[in-house]
Amino acid sequence: MSSADIVVIVMLVASILVLGVTILLLKVIRFYVKESIDPTVFATPEQKALLLKAELEAEALKKAKPSIWTRLMGLKPIAEEESLIMEHKFDGISELNNPTPAWFMVLFYGTIIVAVLYMCNYEFLGFGKTQEEEYIAEVEQANNDKLVFLASPANAKSAVNENNIVQSKDPAMLSAGAGLFQSRCTPCHGAHAEGIVGPNLTDEYWLHGGSVKEVFTTIKYGVPAKGMIAWEKSLSAQQIAELTNYVLSLQGSKPAGAKAPQGDKQP
Image (cartoon, rainbow, N blue to C red):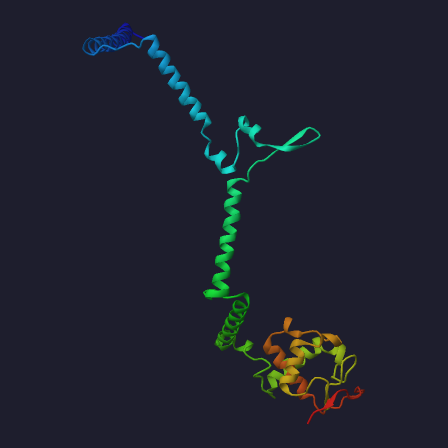
């Protein structure tokens, strides 16, 4: 570091010190001028005592005023506990007659008001729907949504059901139904529908009806009481229709070892 740099640093420090002293001097001059124009009046001992007393009273009043939390919880200061002591004692233990917290009372009376409004709204004025009415409306909406879903061309295969199925002899449908029958129905009805555990499906006798709609319904919902499962959980509506038409196509095939007729004869 050169001597010139040292001189510059010294001058800079000296300037800062001079600036600080100048600021302090200006503050002293300002205070002097202010006191000369409007001298400060110093309180007498009596005035000081009155001021101190007023401050103490204000502080005591501030402490005595309950906080929002204290009022919300319905709490009483410890200094007032003696006024809350009840007359009875047990083993020298006294009970305090603490009031119910304000927040609890607000909730309690609020529930009563809500209950009254609820009853008037649903039972007398009829602006709201009862649970039964809501259930009926939801069922109607679900049925409407189902109809819209089935009416969509993209869901044509799901449109068939037990109410609109029509018997078909289409070879492609019967072939698909045969495959479904062999993979799912043979354990109970036999490879040729001759009947094993389940009934013979090739004769004119039916336990649950032999029309196309009745057979579709039986396959779809099953017969749980007799061990037949509901195939609607694992087969689509189109597959059930294919299986139904295949079963009906077996009428009169008279397979070997056919089981004895069961149920009522269908025309």
